[in-house]
Image 1 (cartoon, helix red, strand yellow):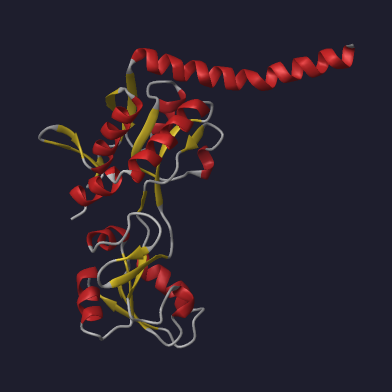
Image 2: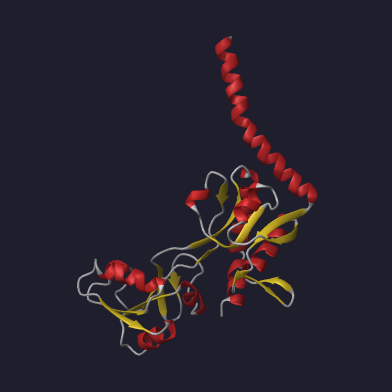
Length: 255
């Protein structure tokens, strides 16, 4: 009997966090308002414009609120204080080019990625190049000092005869690629999306094959204990990705 009582007590303790998460999600829905912490200093994702909070993340959060049946109320919290705002309950979630922070996983949990800001490898559709492993002997263009340049240097040390050519910016790199002076290019993630590459993962445009080479996914942060809210956010993001809403928002702001 004592052992049974111990097992029952352990089961109750294990279920308490689940009950608490469900209760908090019910409270948010009863309130009818999603409290969102923002850092409005990340154009084109999150900034203050003529109509208030604007950008990719602002439009995505509005769409998320509609999907969840909630109004959105934003609070400027700043880059360094967004996790404090989450922990103290000032906001329900934080967005504004947030990336997964391993030092915060005890207090925060992160949604699925909705955008990849990391550099991409571009190669002509007719090229033999399908990814970084195919760059042996290739002429690869980069913007000097960029994240893509750092990725190219990494692969330069691992690929025989890879020739890295640095230019002033990504526009120059693309010009050289189109002219046939390069076999491939490594460019900024935003510039790749401007050229028509997928906002996450890999795919192709009318001209290029696009491959993510150093992912830098943007996510939404919630309290680690808010597992029910996180589940709802992930399902809403999946729905918004499936119906083309996220891609449409990206094309609106990244152009």
